[in-house]
Amino acid sequence: MYFMNKELLYQLALTRVPNIGDVHSKTLINIFGDASAVFKAPVCQLERVEGIGTIRAGCIRHFRDFKSCEAEISFMQSAGVQPIFISDKAYPQRLLHCYDSPLLLYYKGNADLNATKIVSIVGTRSNSEYGRTTCEQLIADLKEQNILVVSGLAFGIDTIAHRSALKNGLSTIGVLAHGLDRIYPNPNRTLAKEMLETGGLLTDFTSGSMPDKQNFPKRNRIVAGICDALIVIESQKRGGSLITAELAGSYNKEVFAVPGRAGDLRSEGCNYLIKSNKALMITGAADLLNEMNWLPKKPAARKQQRELFIEFTKSEKAIVSLLQQNGQVHIDDLYFKTGLSSSSVAEALLMLEMSGVVVSLPGKMFRIV
Image (cartoon, rainbow, N blue to C red; front, side, top):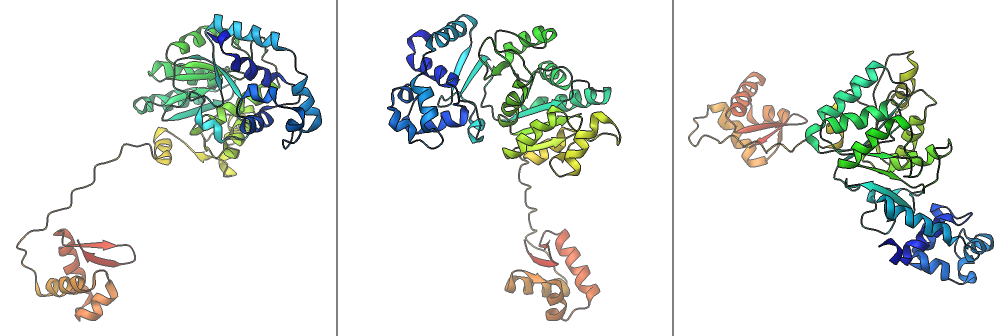
């Protein structure tokens, strides 16, 4: 029962203390160990914490709005919302590497937030047919990869990404810019309900939080930080997707962008990311899988068994003997030390390679297999 967890009450309270954001809160947790210890710490100790000082220490010490925290816990209990504190095992571990990662997350669903492969897909709300088909095909081609698809549940590319993931049997998570007591945009309520069955909804906003404009950049930092790779599919140059791409780059995530026609406003942002080397160009799933090294490992090719009784020509014997004595030998040394003509060496090397006796190396070097 949430009400038996006093620590959760203090965790919630810490997120509501004025002038104490995620960065300062994490500093305090690292020093004092947990949220309850922060509230019980003497003001003199709080003041000595870097970045806290007298004013912020006073805000912590004089915080009294625990009733609203109790109300939030009651809402979570009734709505089936799972609180995930930054020190919990269920917390998305990839976010821990982001300096401004949320202190406390609110989650509904059953997808693993620490899945082996996570891809965030973002883009314009007013996509073209090109953007839709590209997104659908990309996700369809990732069907066998067991990838978790993350997006923002907005109209356009976000919605297409979520629907395509569900269609192809992939888990998908929507990161919201508001509390879990509502769904925005409203037409995506049915989609959100379907996502809860095999994916989930995630936010760092409490109930009652509205989808206000200033909340979306805050939401975008989760989309950018929770993934291994971020893909931008259609975006204007000043679109919110570019902010997400910039954040992902600052978090050392791999950023990909789908190219578009020159002059197309919907592709202006993607083309800019590629041109400025802020994103790798992606035209299909193969580009992602190759760059992320997610392709299945091919079994090592079996070495061609050397014939036990190969009858070498005089030229071949000379080359084999030289290679056995010296290991790797440059082709110029083969000419010089065997005394053979260039055509004789070329012919002998060709036959020895075809027989699996000799292998060529970079730099015109040769050695025995």
